[in-house]
Amino acid sequence: MMKPTLDSPPRTLMEVYKSLPEGTLVELIENNIYMSPAPLYNHQKTLQKIFVSLDSNVTEKGLGDVLIAPFDVYLDEESNAVQPDIIVVLGANQKIIDKQGHIHGAPDMIIEILSDGNKDHDKIKKRALYERFGVKEYWMVDPETKLATGLTLKNQKYEPIAEQEGKISSLLLNTEISF
Image 1 (cartoon, rainbow, N blue to C red):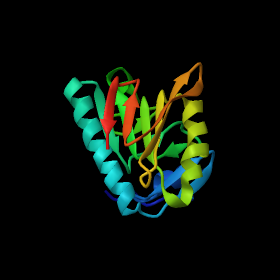
Image 2: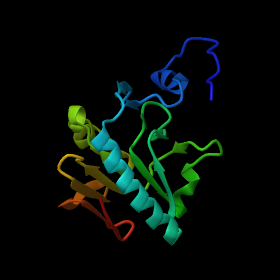
Image 3: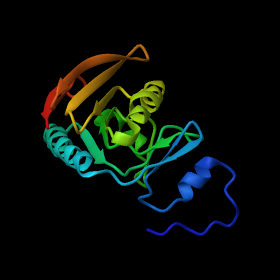
Image 4: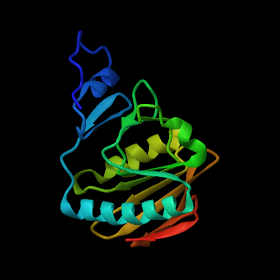
């Protein structure tokens, strides 16, 4: 889908973000733009395995929606828009998906597949962001080692769920996903 031509220059970085072509691998975090190259093979294979298992599990139980990157999540309307690898929005939280299909607010669960060049981006910067905006469960998966690190939100702070190889044990979904 083509974006309309701008009538005037963007005034904010969020306006710049929203004017980028569909599918651009870019995030806006604390009013800083971060661009990424396309993910590598191991990243994509790990993403695929987790998504297929998680989607069938969530769909089978009628719990909500599972979405895959690239997909914009507007944590706020001023300075934070991200494209998590996997997004889970449960039934009770469906109101964050607007009529155009954008997410405005915190998804219930996010899974990020770590990339070699920027692991700290997901482990530090995005972890703090997701914690601050109230993402209930956050998983980081290293596609090389298959190590999955899970966090759950308690009293507005992340606490460890598990650090395990080849599986995600979600407390929120009460399920285990092997990959």
